[in-house]
Image (cartoon, rainbow, N blue to C red; front, side, top):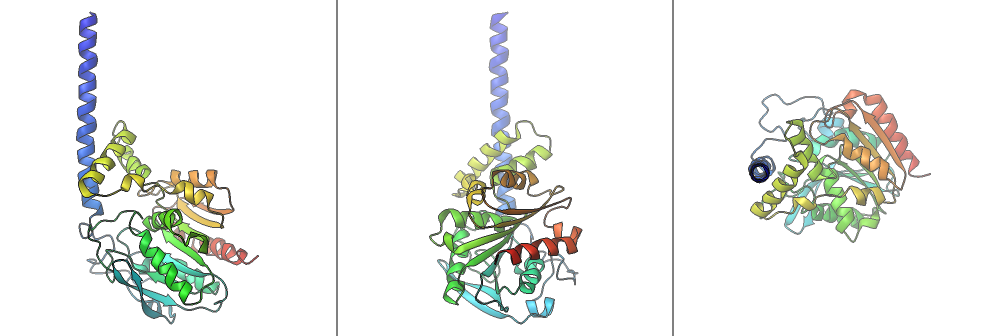
Length: 317
């Protein structure tokens, strides 16, 4: 009997190992498809009928066309070359300026909800492109790396606004843009120039994002599969996505944080934002909605605007 128990135990271990190996390879292949620029039209460029409402994701048009706001197309120097940005001036040039950072495969236009609120508060705003975007240099290893490389572009954008006269900076970021902001705070020597963060569904823990997606498919040992899959992907693509975790850094950042996230988010689990709120040591305003990814504004525009505008005005108190 003991011999059979041992054999069954060994068999189960082998099967578990094969399951994890197969799951890791599948996860790595899926990540390669999702995170290689051009594999998926995240920005909606192929949509023959893009929305006409600038507050809808997938809208295309500059700030003048979208919101009637005068703007200037500028370029800021990254380590890969110049990247294009839109600078929208506003009344309060002596206070902090804002930089908007879009999410994975997204566009500057995705930030018009935030821009409209920032502009109402009198805050000059730079809407950036970053590596692998249209209007920005391609990375030698083309990959959406959740801030592990893109933080350098945000660093360059911060340098640009500071040279233009900004005393300090608010970073407004969504989805993977939140990951970029988090990695910036971890690595940049200019992190202390960021006095506040406005985040919408920020992907501050890439491993948690992957584990949540696998768990949603009812796969056993989702966290183990996620860790193994991300590890295989890092090895295959020469990436460091297993290190794309900045929740603790954002939790410890001293400046005020505005955070919006929806419980129905199918891309970035709201559990990451709940953890951020629980771990925060500084002030935070949390708009917790029932919306899907980046749709908290659409669920209740008046509430979103009131909460974020009140938060922005409180920064001068």
